[in-house]
Length: 151
Length: 189
Image (cartoon, rainbow over all chains, first blue to last red; front, side, top):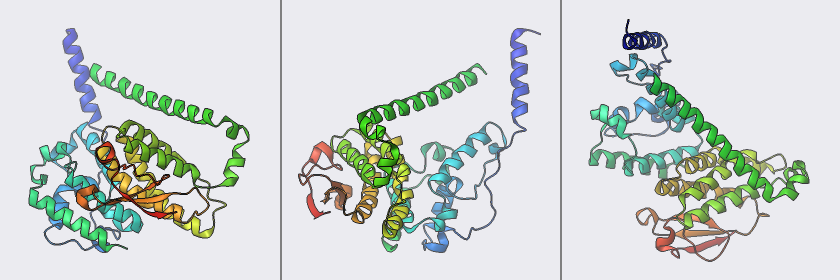
């Protein structure tokens, strides 16, 4: 066997090997008692936007793409989701203090306004998560009003 | 494989640098008040105030005044540490209540400011909410230094924002050197 072939073989074995290591999936399959919808009213036009553009990384229920079963893509997604949920988890929103809820709503509006969220690396793959100007305005409007409504 | 390996080394190297950076920062900070350190930590702790938190906040504020996002990031890290370190045992019940209410939120804002050393716009967004946290906090610590609650009507598309300052003289942390003197003192605390 030539040197190149050996190297390729090693890579192949490694690739197959890592397929066995699956990160835990972020699918609770139920609506948490602390879900944001239980504390804050979300208008009909905003709810589906949050679901398609935010919930994959900011809730307990990720809608996984098929390639998430391939490693190391799955690992990469898992770490992304972990980071996302640490910052903001819509499924646990009700457990935050009012102060933090207000903070989070404010950040939702500013992150969307600044074009930071949804991440461009995410919308690049999830084309339907790309928000139009009007959709962004709807989310920001909701977040700002909801923030003001909290006391 | 080689690339992966090198990436791994790079990551380890980076995190090592980080720790070193933090350590040297702490060292210099400690060197600054050697006398205090030598007199024993318990002595400072027993004073148990939010002065370190306020000091770090003001450093952050002044960095933003100077449009210096790097310094703001450093001050954000200091603030995060100061909040974590604060000993609340001798606080009154009211003070403890407010502090525990503010703690998580303020720490999170400080953390974000620390990790966004190249994005001053984002730092200022967090600074705005952080300023509200700090305001609520200093209100229940009347013995701490005199501060001025100052208002800038122009920030965030004329929605306006507040900040705490140690001087009456206006130096705007939201608009920085562009509009340095925009704002007015609302309250002396």
